[in-house]
Every structure is written in C-alpha cells, then in structure tokens.
Amino acid sequence: MSQLFELVRDHVEGFDTIAQEWQTADGIKTVNITLARPAAWIERVHEKGVLTALDCLALIFFVLDDWSAEPTREQEVQLVEGWAAELRRAATAGEIQARHPFTLLPLPNVPEGLDWGLLASDADKFVTARGMAWNFGDIAAHIYREVLTDIESKRFPSFLEGATPAQPQAAAPAPVVAECANDAPVDGITTAQVAAIFDGIKYRAENWTRRLSDTKWLEPAKVALGAQGGASSLWNPATLARLIHDKERGTAKQKTLEALNRKFKSKPVLAPWRTAWDEHYDMFKDADGRH
Image (cartoon, rainbow, N blue to C red; front, side):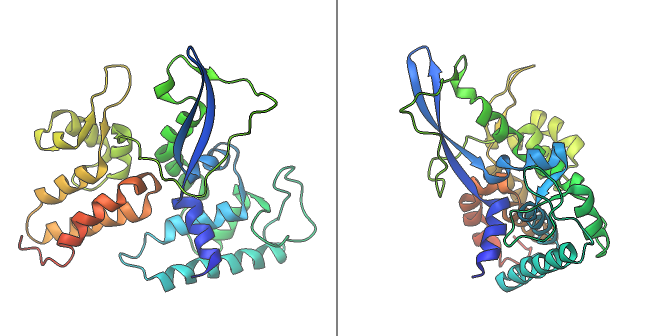
C-alpha cells in the first residue's frame, strides 16, 4: 500500500491517544484522551486559513473519496498520489506559493515532503483551476464542527470538572501521542453531531434535533440524557444507524444502508463505532431490498 496514501488518509481519519496530567483536589491525575486526528490541526485551517501540504491533500481526499459509493483501494491511492503530484507541480510552477509552515514567509523552492505551508486562498485557487466547485473554508468548517467536542475535551476534559492543568515539573515528561488509540471510545456523539452527520438521511439537519427528542423508536440509541441549558444528550451512532436502516422498506432500505455505510467510512468522528456498524452492514449488504 502507498505510504503517501496511508499518511494522507490517517491525517483525516486516524485517532490518537494523548496522555495529560491534571491537578485535582486529590492531587495530580493522569488521563488518556482519545481524539480524532483532525482535532490537532483543523482549528488552524478553520480559523486562520493556513494549511500544510498534508492538510491540503487530506481535505481533498475527504471530499473526493466520498464521491464513489465503493472506491477500491487502488482508486483511493490513485486519488491521493495524483493530487499530490498536481499540488507539487502547481507550487513549483508558481501557480501557488509554498510557504514556511511557521513564519508563513514565501519559500524560494518547494521543500521535499508535505510539511510546507500554503494559504487557504492559494489552496482554493488550486482546486478551482481544476474544476472543483467547493472551497477549503467550507470543508474545514464542516470537519471542525464534527471534531469540536474532541478539541474542547483536549483543553478541558469534561470528566475532570473543577480540575486545572498541572503545572510543569522538571521531572515530568511532556504529554505524548501514542501511535494508536486503544482506549475505549467516548460514550456517544452529541445531538448537534447527529444532525450534521446524518443530514439528509431520514431527516434534514434542521429536523433532527426535534426528532431525537420526541421520536420513540430512536430512544434505544440514547446513551446519556442531556440537561436543559447544559450538556447535550449523547447517542450511539451505530445503534442510531441500525434503527434508521431497520425503519426503511423496499428499495429504500438498501439505498439507506449504503448511504449510512458511506458516512461511517468517511466521517472521522464515527471511527470508534465503525466495527459495530460493520457487523450490521455485513448482514444486509447483499440484500435485495425485500427485507
């Protein structure tokens, strides 16, 4: 498998476990927080309009990999490698400006690798010139909303209410990022995340909030009850997707199954529940709509 493909895919679909030390009333406690990998970089793209070449390719992959219902691995590798080569050609030709990733000053030559920076305005110009009708600002905003809970939990984990970050100590190691995330996933996704992710499947985004609060057949997916004016209810997306699929009849049943499967394949926030969803999907993927 292409190392470049793995790097780009994991940049938008991967997960990391971060070890943090927090000062509590009972002393310093170490907690492990599992985060979608975009939580480490999408805020910079969303708020400052600054990308690395790797960010740029990851966002392109996020958008274009969704276009095919069942892309092969070969097609996905071709997608990444083709756009990577095109991005380098554009920067080398001066169509877009390669920049230092920290100072953002223009670079005279395009560095090797994907750590060099570029502005979102240049990235937009790059994809628009190749026939794309979307822009990086909108895509970054979409992913930012999906991983906002992760970004906030990194700054202040909700399960450590009243805690403050521990002051650095000479002997204390800096927070480390594990190569893989083995900890149990968070309990569920918020109502707002459900609305954004499942927009257009069964209900439009603007209707999902009301439906989640007053539709009995969706209640089995609720894993935590929210409080008025406080925390949102949490939902198990795999259970929710199963309930949505079970509700459909005829040819719509199979179409909905495939639409849900594309969500679990393309949305980083759903990765902790992908295995649970795959079990349901594998049971029905060869059905003909008569179930």
